[in-house]
Figure (tube, rainbow, N blue to C red):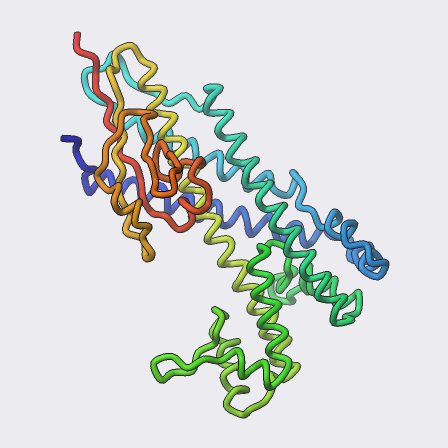
Length: 344
């Protein structure tokens, strides 16, 4: 029977992930703030004034120079996952195993993981900005106001452009626009608030200060005041950006590290003194556990045999990119490998 990881091995994996999470999150946020600061605000206002939505989207594109530090953080996460395998090489193999991060397969993995994330960020940002521009046209907002809605205003405290749409996903922006619009009328505020277990709560997840303002307006039967809306809109967008950074960090750092570990064991399997490598699925007990991931807990497959999910997706290991977001988002599962030396 295949062994389960020891508490010290689990702790080592968790420590690697925690470090990678922080690096990827910080790199993402830094890229967003850098992209906002580089925008030519006058040119953006002119494009919005002219109704040039596609031109505005192109102007706001986060280019390779902005996103390179994020890709570099993912590369470090991948390499850390591969190098960590050195400590788990089986006894009885010839010499010492060393992970080769410059192997063509590893370099292809790193390029693919970074490239996939860049394309996802670009697609989702385009959706977000288009939604804001179309909403601004519908509400007849001024071009300058719309531009600041997108890139944010400079904070006197941080010097950064805060409270902008740049960096948010399409679904996040749609949620923000709903809350923004509903706060403007007493009827909208009534729609925003629900009662659950005898308590008043905001229908959508917002930051605590915004929730308090909405509930206070609800009790008075009024709209949220214009000054309170301005503060809430900035705070809410800042919270959404932090949430996005954390989600990207959790998903992408885990994906990169898992891919690095898988490649390390593939390199181990390439050795003539290794007979086989097995992969064991370890369920991570996330808050909303996927039934098929939970069912896979303890399942063992030969290397590259694959785990078949309920929807037919075949994954070589937890966080295999083949599973897509539906199998990776907020998943805390991991793989435990065992390398079996060839008998002499």
